[in-house]
Length: 258
Image (cartoon, rainbow, N blue to C red; front, side, top):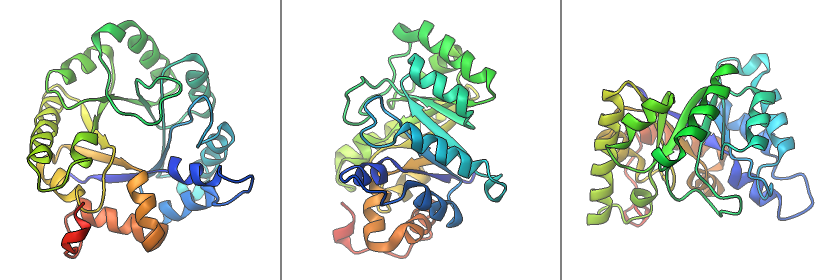
């Protein structure tokens, strides 16, 4: 199974928003990422618009709906409140990923507690299915969760990889987190769900994840890729991450592992 890359542009938008200037240009960098081989683009338009703005969503949607990118995908992430659901219904992305973030949360740092939110998720997923979107739920590494995700009607899980990505690569903590991710991916596949993954992923730690969890069909990567792009450029970093997913990247220096 081939794992593909969706480039999250939130960090690019956050850098732009430090000044009242139009650069770095989110759409231009999204175009470069697509041309370099990314399967699609991801944004998480939070209510305070501190990084991706509603205007960015519309401009990226126009890019992805152009004939040049007919085979690429738009993935909108967000909490399923009315503002976000209405934006999805307007834009009609190929994929919607529901995350359990509070409005002011700095970044996604945990997955859904599915059962207490069952009614919200069932209703919200149904609305997204009505616009033809594929729906993923952001979950922690826990092999009991995919069955619950299946019951509320989602198509995919997105594995929260923060505990793995945020640990030194050769540490016991990383090993334990990787085993939990692999087990959850197997559980998702067993109930008929596809698997995405994302958070704190880097060129260094992606190969082990792709090897341990071959069920993963898509990785959504933003912060680590944007940081990498400061050295290698957006196109270069997209190619580096794709190669890392396929374990084809040349050896790195040991200092690059974490």
